Length: 210
Ligand SMILES: C[S@@+](CC[C@H](N)C(=O)[O-])C[C@H]1O[C@@H](n2cnc3c(N)ncnc32)[C@H](O)[C@@H]1O
Ligand SMILES: Nc1nc2[nH]cc(C(=O)O)c2c(=O)[nH]1
Ligand code: SF4
Ligand SMILES: [Mg+2]
Image 1 (tube, helix red, strand yellow):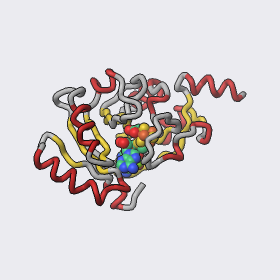
Image 2 (spheres, helix red, strand yellow; image 1 turned 30 degrees about the vertical axis):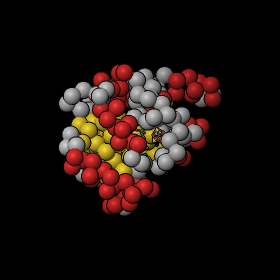
Image 3 (spheres, helix red, strand yellow; image 1 turned 135 degrees about the vertical axis):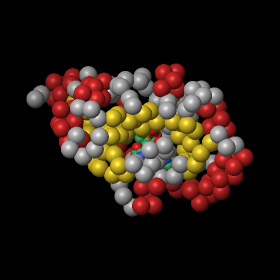
């Protein structure tokens, strides 16, 4: 196929730049400990300085892959599919999620919510970033709010973000990995004083799994 034809398919979400896909245990948030198949889509313009997958940012580095191929792989492994990135909402997630759901699979997203919400989601994990705040629709859809804590100012940001989600949204504080020794005590103390929050750890990094 010609380059511009493939680009047209990426623009409509029929193809997606695929960085990697792997079967693992969801390490973070509400579903931590549960086996799931991860699809990591390339492309992100948010620019978090502590991002743990900077290789995902440049969409050009990841091969445009048809959603038919992505779904055919995913369905072999799990009934729960986590779409992450990169920032998945860079792209139109409707074709991918509709095809996953047509196979009876559950669709979970990991997103900053910075771009228009597309796709059909059984679970919406919103992890807002100060650099590009979530859209109003992303706050509405959030089943869990996961704030990354790099320093104590992020606890103030966390409270501001918690005001924007539904009252039944589950609230998590997750230490930024490189600062974990410093911020874990802050988070522990904060959660004991403010028990509407829960702690989320990147447990896959302790388990040495993807
Ligand atoms: C790599 S991001 C991809 C999905 C989307 N772009 C987002 O930020 O939600 C996946 C999850 O990892 C979190 N994350 C990224 N880098 C991290 C780090 N250094 N420490 C802790 N969590 C991190 C993000 O906040 C997000 O919840
Ligand atoms: N095991 C595992 N759990 C995860 N939860 C969210 C992840 C992500 O990078 O989006 C992630 C990841 O990369 N691995
Ligand atoms: S929004 Fe997500 S993928 Fe993008 S830089 Fe931030 S943590 Fe990384
Ligand atoms: Mg990760």
